[in-house]
Image (tube, rainbow, N blue to C red):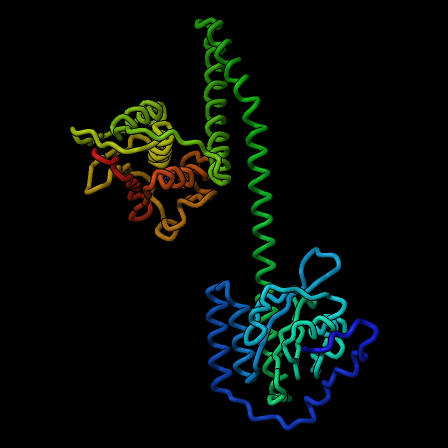
Length: 428
Ligand code: ADP
């Protein structure tokens, strides 16, 4: 049982600090093969953004230094009093992983205060909580690392028995690894900041869509009332009402798409699944998309099987997905184009294709075309486009039905083909 020293009644911290020994002890020759191996493995993990990076770092620190334990302590954000968390530990400290220690009374705190590596001998003499752990620590070598320019943690290696005495080569190795710790911590902070900004943006878009949606319904009703009372003989008045009607409908569609994306992200989209034939879904979608198809004088070819192709789904949501594909085909195909809608039952899947002979999609954008806000044709978009959420919504809706959607195009002006696969309903 170790002696538990109370703060104040224990030896001064300077009595446990023995950093000068590192330079006095003979340094072993570097093992470049082992070191290169570790560095290469770490760089590979960094490149693949592995989430076990801190653990790998600790493992390499222990191995390269021939230590009996190693660990990485990170200052916690926003805790008062401040504390370090052992985010990764190995050897005899492994069971302590996830534990915390006070910022102001710990070897790590001392290292951060001084801003330099420290070697401590028998630190339990000074730090009561280390004594309380009942893990003998003959020596611990701690090296600070920073995140975005501020010291935030330490990487440390431990000799429990004292058989291993750390020297200059250990300091060099842990210093090198601490640079990785800085890179990982800085990268992690950037990712967290981006995720927070993304969440804020999503929350803002959700709120904005709600605020925009509210005045749209009364506007639409007002247009309809005016239309009923309008004098058909007045062509200007009729044209103005058409403009109002079309624009409020277009805005409502955009805002509804935004609201749906927010609902999907928050898991709040309500689905009403039932057995429905894809032929029925297509009939409703084609009726709704008719104005878009007609406005561009497109020729429409429909190729449907005689037998109903039945899926388990929310009819309105499936119609919405099909409409987005049809409207896009109409939008991104020059006037007088040809749009083909095909449906087949293949194995246990319903396969629906919407093909056009329009402006096509560049090959490098195909893999990202279903991401939010992706627009393939940017500034030089030949037709009027929306917000770049239609296809993202299609993918989400299709996936909520257990299906998937793919886009294909041989490039500019060769047309595009979107294929939706949905599982067939059981028994039909
Ligand atoms: P939006 O049409 O509002 O821009 P979408 O998410 O529906 O957004 O589509 C994303 C992008 O994909 C479009 O901006 C367009 O560049 C491209 N795209 C979609 N459908 C087609 C199509 N049938 N032919 C060519 N490009 C298309």
